[in-house]
Image (cartoon, rainbow, N blue to C red; front, side):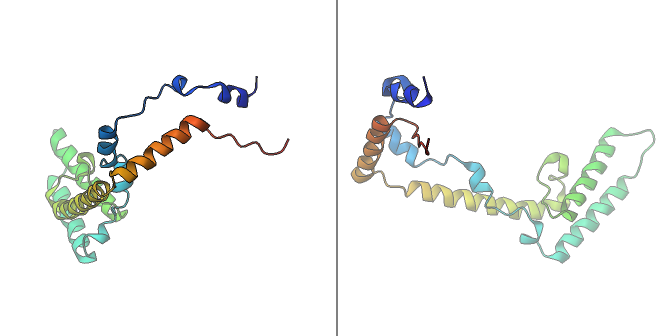
Length: 166
């Protein structure tokens, strides 16, 4: 039995899919499903949120903070971790990235302004995506298009097979 015979033999009831109600479909139309796609539109380049002078001042403040922590004897793990996070935050900035994670020093006061500006841009992108999703039509015409899509799916199956020459 070849793949075409297998696909043709599938009935809509065997696909394991039950169509949602109109109310659930309408709610789905107003939802954001791919947050990663939305957040990927937000720049993570610190130069988009701060001037070169501001970034240089952040780097200098991080280096001063790290140097003030020094190397303590006996070794204080909290100081050592804070020193490491200062180093990581400075490294991220030099690499053209915004330190956002705790482990990268994203919580340090030296980068708080940058983190705040990034967060506002992120929130604005999420709000724009939410407004775009809420603007999707859920009227009778849109519902009819959805029903037609479902009829086509049931008629043709979930997978279209294209046979290229034999």
